[in-house]
Amino acid sequence: MTLAQRIDLLVRLGDYIKADNEEWQTAKQQAYVQNGWFVPGFINMATSNIAGFFLEREKLESWVKQYNLPEENANPKTVGLVMAGNIPLVGFHDFLAVFITGHIQVIKASSKDAVLIKHLVKKLYEWEVTVQNYVSFAEMLKSCDAYIATGSNNSGRYFEYYFSKYPNIIRKNRTSVAVLDATETPQELDLLADDMQQYFGLGCRNITKLYVPKDYDFLPLLGALKKYNYFLDIHKYKNNFDYQLALLLLNNRYYMSSGAVILTENEPVFSPVSQVNFEYYTDREQVLQKLNGDDNIQCIAGKGFIAFGQAQQPSLTDYADGVDTMDFLKNL
Image 1 (tube, rainbow, N blue to C red):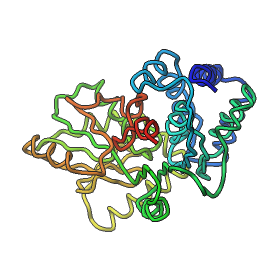
Image 2: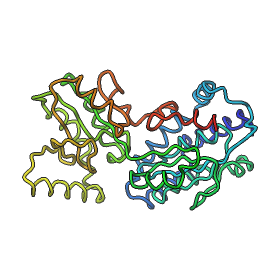
Image 3: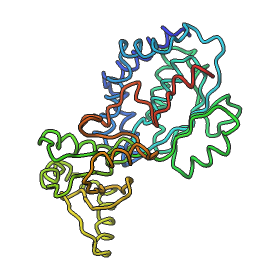
Image 4: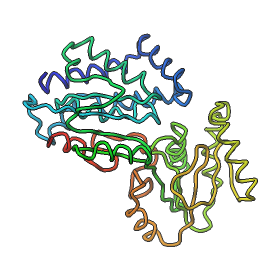
């Protein structure tokens, strides 16, 4: 397949997602049945973002132009992809990068998120049978020329052990933070609430830690978070909320709650589902220096950083962990 043909197929895939026909709706429902965290609203959000930010012709053509990709890949390599499953189609960008560069990929889909990616690849098979020569699935990845693997810190060590002899990109746990200055408008706090709670806070681009100035008034933010009180109707979330709340009460720890989100003063940048940590600061520059040296940080939201509400809307060039996947693939 030529580059132009691959772009045509990807644009068609975006149109298929946007059309939301009965077949696609059935696949999304199956994904929810398989994984209770993948509620329909968040599946629709993830897939809509993919169609709108990744699969539009102008954006794809502009993206590949930056890398001067040849019309045909004369020496395609086989790339093994290990996909995560924390939010719907979280591994799609890796699939997209390998596909558009003309390499062959073997995907180990996460058991938590196998339905959606397999359905979309099946549609590509239907439209162009030769896609089967470029994309396949396997439970074990062997004899690949390179690997891109995403997982936890524990699985990351496993990946490093097995894939270290080959060109690789290995991603471990990451999270995101927000730096506030107390001048945020109600609209900005409303968008910050989305950055914190979309996908139940399970994504690496979700805000799990807040840095706030001394004497910060949390009431407006707690008010903005109330729109997510419906999470308590979702048993998987409520179980987490009840457990974290019980821990804080048993340990006599101070906390604040919007009703379904707990805010507590705590140093770690990672926080459990239903809880967001915060830390007071007096010197903003010291906070920024600290964050710049922290490999756990995926992105920072706030004035001078990513705008509130855009943490979960990455573009094609917002590479996970800051590692340019396209450059890696181009130079295999």
